[in-house]
Image (cartoon, rainbow, N blue to C red; front, side, top):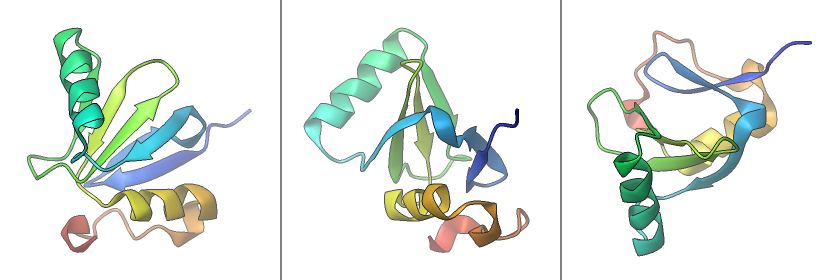
Length: 94
């Protein structure tokens, strides 16, 4: 049994099967969710020091922050590894 990983930017990967939701960070409920998860230590920051563009909710209750657009991550999850850029590529343009 293998785990399908999805590239979420700057060399970081997440298990695609564990992602429950992908959202933009601007809405108040998402901001509250991030603050709540941060308070209990369930935040995974994958932004590489850049601005958060996507919030990924995982089935474990953890929340991952990514610096690439939610639509880009959704396309990568649905299309599989063949559609991902090389890991050395800079994802800042996404």
